[in-house]
Length: 288
Image (tube, rainbow, N blue to C red; front, side, top):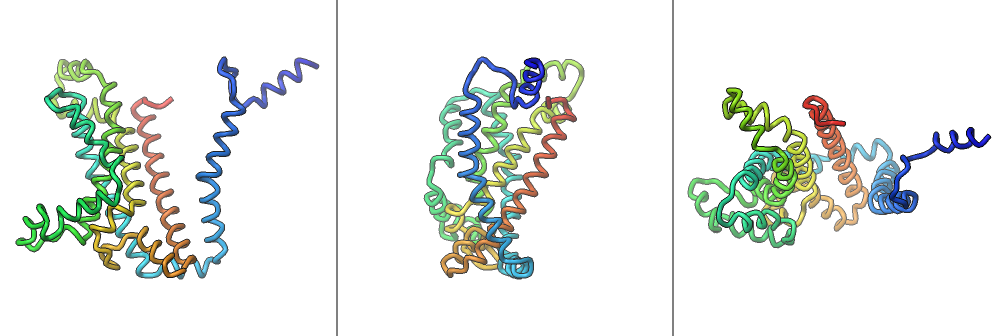
């Protein structure tokens, strides 16, 4: 009888025995915190949207201004994340592989967008890239405008998203030994082959993670963008700003619909990125 009871208890056990106690307490706190901070707000948003009915939801979601704002937000976020992947990988490479004067200061400056208030970043970028700004004045005679256009939005998203890529790739690069590169060169591989066939496979999951984080931050960014975007409907108006406008108009239905559409698109893109990450880990032998 005791053996059967022991087998039943082991069958329903959630985790393996551990010398560290407190699984029940910490698991309960984790589920409660996750529910209150993340799950409950998302479910409330979903229930509020479901209450509109399919017809009303579609009418509000297919509004031309809403579609234009969503297009601006997601397209610019994708472009900024792609740019950050390229240059963030190069910056992480320099910080890990080389030692030079001022390296520690340069490494610390990478984290500045984390600490800098987004409104301050937006004002600073606008002052620099405006037609009469330091950099904007150089392009104004050519007829190129950076501030108050989608290009300005991309620059703001690059600024806030770069640390996510660098800090995600940097620790993985530190784990890759120089001996691996030297062995590749000894076996006759060119530098390009070493990068593409030896280094990139090990960095691919981290690169995709950095891309996903930078993309998610860019889509949801508000403070650093509204100053440099110009906020012109159908041109440089982002979805978070349109949500704020709908709330100012007391159009809570419209704001809820925009937020729900953004949530669904973000979930779909992040889910696809996670699938690619899982495939990459299995393909190159970095999974469990």
